[in-house]
Amino acid sequence: MADADDIREQMKNIRRGMGAEVKGLVQGAQQLSDWRYHVRKHPWACVGSAFLLGLFAAPKRRAAGRAELEKLMAQFHESNPAGSAQPSHGLLMKVLGIAGPIAARGAAQFVANRFGGAKQAPSEDDPRDTTFEQVSKPR
Image (cartoon, rainbow, N blue to C red):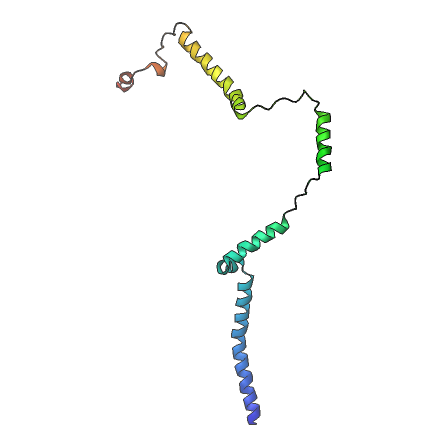
C-alpha cells in the first residue's frame, strides 16, 4: 500500500503544479503573439524584416527594352510632327506667366488711385474718415 500512497502523493503534486504550468504556457503564447514585445526586444531585426517584406511585396519594375523605346519614339514622332513641338519654357517664364497679370492689375489700380481724378468728399457716415478724437469723444 505504500506504493499506492506514493503514487497518490505524486499525482497530487502533479495536479498542483499543472495549474501554474498551464498559466505559464498561456502567458508565453500571448507574449509570442504580441508584436510589440518583439519590436521592443529586437528592434533592428523587425526593421530589417519590414524592409525585406516591402522589397518582396512591391512589384518589380520592368526594364524597357530598346525595341520598345524605339516603338514609343516612333509613335511620338507620328503624333507630334517636327515643327509643331513647342519649346519648353523654363521655370522663370512660368512664374512670370502667373505673376505678370497680378502685377499688371496692381499697377493699373495704383495709376487709377494716383491719377484718377478728384477724391470724393468724405461723408459723415463713413467710419474710415473719422479721427481718434471723434471716436473717443463721449456722446
